[in-house]
Image 1: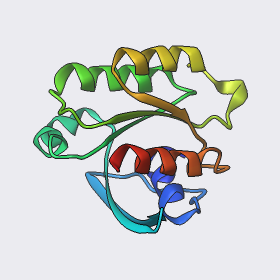
Image 2: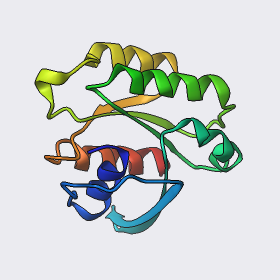
Image 3: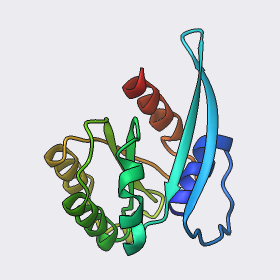
Image 4: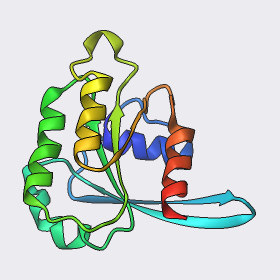
Length: 148
């Protein structure tokens, strides 16, 4: 249950127990109503691999950036650091999302470590679970709050 599963949970409220490996970019959209207004959000799910560099110009145009890592894998946060070191980002709001918090006994990255990382990079921080839906509504609300 990684980035693509998290996005699926955010948009549909459901999560595929056996997600397929994503190659390239996956697109999803979501319509949300808040304070009497409807918002349509388009998500671009860029695979977390070293080929991400070809998407850098595209990333520059985003209104908000989500950086998702797995709390059970220290290398996933290291990868985000590598991306941040390579990519000149715009001034859009950024959210660091620690996913897989349901894997309590396998956790490698503490909440405190992730929060410090987020503060260092001027990001909001939230922890979620695509598998059990923990904090998905809070994440959706945070996204809207930062976009409005």
